[in-house]
Length: 197
Image (cartoon, rainbow, N blue to C red; front, side, top):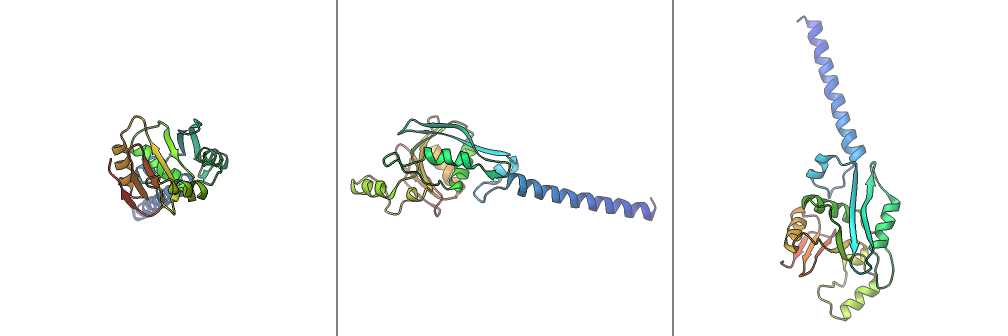
């Protein structure tokens, strides 16, 4: 192989690697655009969409495979539907649900290898409802609850144990995880854990 051929091969290999790197950047940054809460297992899958299913245990309303993220962005209509489902059923007030909470729930579902609906016991909670529950002495209602910010969900999965759900959520180290007898509290606040299954 002469010097000219060697140089051309070197340049074309460098050009190929350069283009490969740019393509990988575009794939990860443009199409997938993962949030910091999503773990490497979801990044590797390069999901083109994220969806969740819910059943509100108080209202009976449900969402099946609600695609809230697609083509590199959150879907405003899907978020509106989720906000409605997560509303405070006592006052009928809605609030924007933290997108990071939805990403976290997606990661929990992925980790537990399930597509079944999350049973939602409590999503958004108005300040009035939160105060009322504290006055009644309802256990575990914090004065400055993440529920009042749209950053928390009390959930369970019918075909998984509370302990399995707790462990999956704790393993992600992405926020608060509280374990109660009938549900697990998940939030996007600081990392902390309480309660045992």
